[in-house]
Amino acid sequence: MSDEDSELERLKAKRLAEMQKNIVSKQSSDKPTEQSQEKPAENPRDLLLKVLGFRGLEVLENAESQFPNEAKMIVQKLSELIKSGELNETIDGGQLLTLFRAVGLNIRMETKINVEQDGKFVSLTDKLSKESKDDE
Image (cartoon, rainbow, N blue to C red; front, side, top):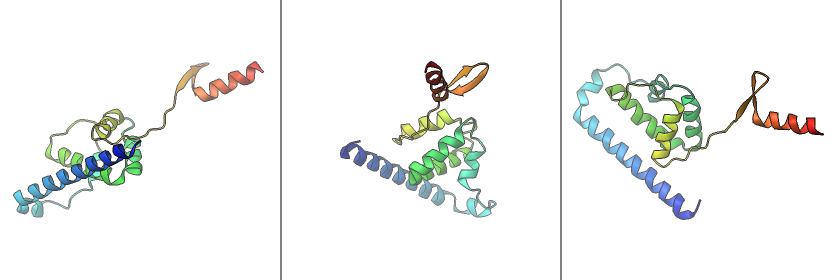
C-alpha cells in the first residue's frame, strides 16, 4: 500500500470518528433526562454479539485486532442502531465484513478451502499433500 493510500485511510478513519462524535454529542444534548432514567447502559459489544450470525464473531474479532479504534466506533454505532430498532436483523460474517470494507477497513480473513474426500471434508492443503505422497 502506498503512502497516499495509507494517508487516505487515516483521513477516512478520522472523518468517521468526527461524524460519530457529532452524532453522539447531538443525541446526548437532545435527550439528557432520558438517559439518566434508563437502566445502566449495556456494553455496546455485548449488544452487537446478540445479533451476530454465522461467522460474525470471527469477523468482529479480526476487525478488533487489526483496527481496534475504528472497530470500536463501528460497534458503538451498530449498537445504537440496534437499541433504536433501526437494525433488527441478524448480521452474519459476510455482511459485517462488507460493512467494514465499505468504510475503508480492509479486514484480512484467514481463508480455508475444504473439499470432500471419501464422504468427509478435508482441507485442500491436506488433500494435495496426500496426493503428492501417493504419487511418489
